[in-house]
Image 1 (tube, rainbow, N blue to C red):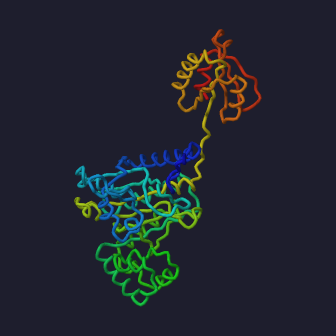
Image 2: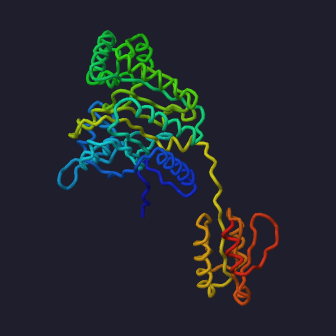
Image 3: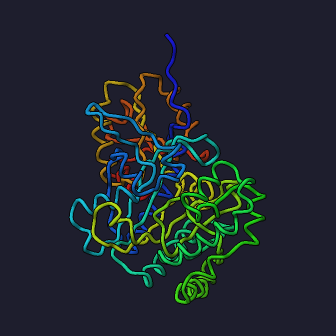
Length: 414
């Protein structure tokens, strides 16, 4: 019978992989809590219209990458390609769109694209949404969170870029100027950039075409169109966080989703190669009203966990592990009673019960091949004397026979 493989771009994560995952996720959760953020969990499946209305029809996510299909009621539903739209949908549905909220989330997302390093079809994101806060202190808070993540997770060689996309009027003026400037170069644009120029000119600043990038260097800059207060915000952010992270203003920075307005930002690391961004976000003051809710100023970010984990320099603490061995199967019930006592005393230690029917010699041989620090051995002699043997697996020290009470005390202090 033919074996069934996993879907392309949807990897399994085994125990050794998850040591790094757990370490990073726990640190992120601690950072989020230190900023008084509250967790929200939204469904993996949403109506496809949610992403069409929020992400935008010109986005590659909607046009090429979304996992969409019709359910039994012929409704188009999609696996979520990003987290913000679902959060705002939930806030509107619960009638929380007239109040302030500080939210974080974490979980899998899905995009149908060519798998490559740090970029899979099932990937994982953590995100933050500060909802109901006008431009100003919330923008500083968001960059502060980014700075904390970079420093707490010990990410090196990081660039944090910021830009401001302006309000609707300044965006419209800049877009018209950009279209006019690029008009003589239209025939040189590839099909994707021609569509961007027609439907959402700002997105053309995100082009990967090196020739077009050179042309754009001579074109209009959004700096000329945004307000003095927007420029001042960028300069103040740079001044405030210049010591805690390498922050620079990049007037060509845009984000790939249509709902962004105002401040946008992106953290990247040279250690990631071509796809070097691992945190990105910005302000999206109009998204709630676009999805049928009240006006709700907001700013958010998303973190690519696969990329973040690959560049984090966190010191991962070695797992504390002890092997419990019985010499014969007839004493297993007592062993499990003792094991339960041990686990209740110290949950930071992994107690691995040897469940095989092998000889004591074979069990010890296997124990020596693990990363366990000690073996606890319970045999017939130990039952009679109400003792248990503690054997070090880290050096050549002799094993000692101790009372069960002394063993409990030893285990509690590991």
